[in-house]
Image (cartoon, rainbow, N blue to C red; front, side, top):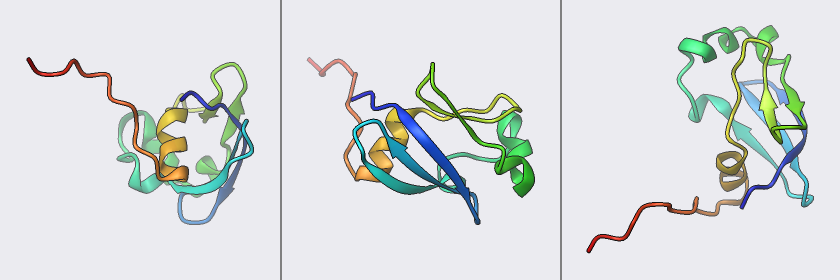
Length: 91
């Protein structure tokens, strides 16, 4: 899948409006994706959450605190498509 994020706009309520390289756009509620602990703990502060940037090299969103999110997961949420399975089939 691997669709890079090219734009991220922080919204109220820990949401991000995202645009992907293929033109797909949508909103993701980050509070439904992560627990705000560890590296994500600083994002509980709305001011810190709003510092989100797009890392062009990684193709995803990141924050100065070191938190980032998997662009494949975000794309799946926005499009409603399942993530690919990399598990070996049971024999």
